[in-house]
Image (cartoon, rainbow, N blue to C red; front, side, top):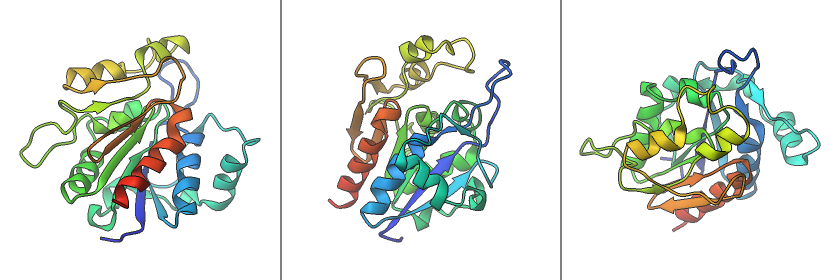
Amino acid sequence: MSRTSVLFVLTSHGKLGETGRSTGFWLAEAAHPWRVFTDAGYRVDLVSIQGGRSPIDGADTSDPVQRAFLDEVDLAAARPVAAADPADYRAVLYVGGHGAMWDFPGNPAVTRLGTDIYAAGGVVAAVCHGPAGLLDLREPDGSLLIAGRDLTSFTNAEEAEIGLDTVVPFLLQSALRQRGARHQDAGIFAPRVVVDGRLVTGQNPPSSAGVAQQVIRLLGS
């Protein structure tokens, strides 16, 4: 297992329900962790659900970190998630954006990555809608990884605030709680990072860099 490798998982889903609007991964939720990891000397690899370039949502090119990510990272080179070997990584980050709500849950490759990396002593992280990728992760004994754990995600209130609570296929906060997670939040659009063992979660885009900082802290301990 490389001591310097972190894997980002990106959605390949670009359709926002039946609204006629596009979605994808939220750019800041990849760009800001990427900046934190690379500045700390970690290599970041990308996979997407289908492989290749993922659709982008929420881009703010006035943000120099997002601009640098677009300039320096070859999104088209992302491998399919099923091609990634969990043994190559010390940590995985499930990047958010509404697209993740459609193609992260129930995907065996998404589940395998997090389950195997955690079982090998690595760190599993997710931000905003990225915790949709945590729903089916398992402990070695077969129990749900998130059951009884403290975590956070984009909240039901935040979903309602942006008018998408009836568009997404399910409410993420509710689904996490239904699987036994102890969900925490800091209020609508306030940053919140929760660490429980080697599980690190962030509530929303402003939490993205903080998630990466906590992953680095765990990897160094």
